[in-house]
Length: 186
Image 1 (tube, one colour):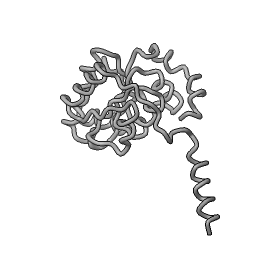
Image 2 (image 1 turned 60 degrees about the vertical axis):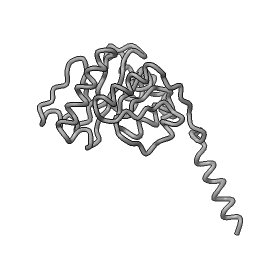
Image 3 (image 1 turned 30 degrees about the vertical axis):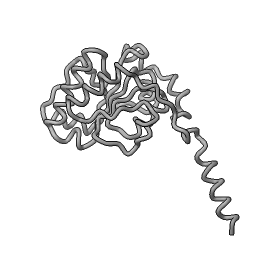
Image 4 (image 1 turned 45 degrees about the horizontal axis):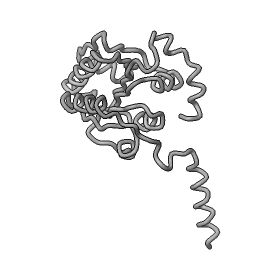
């Protein structure tokens, strides 16, 4: 992500969407637990609509998610701007300029931590707890009440977060050092 951030800043995605930096939120949903159950997906969309009453939301919908919305006749209200999936550089620019990200993606919760962007993780658990302990991620759950409670918490007490200790881009050098020491020890 860091290697591509400068390139991403060249993207004109904000102009194409008519968005101003830090004035919108970004949504991604793709996990089967959130999109395959029509009632669950409808509840999340309803919850996002409540949040969209406070901050405009852009939702580059994964093809699978878009298909589930269509198949289940779940309308995405206009306050949530459903857009086509984006290439990585456009997405990175949109994410890096957002005021909040609401996602069920593991990778995105890591990237928001690295970028210092508040993130509401629309899941009941995470395999990346460091993004909660040290980063900007709040585990919001998947139900309307828990997501709105996390939204209120984020507004009341925004997480400053920090980049976790070993997220310095030097993992390969540390691994090489350990391998050299191991191999030279006999």
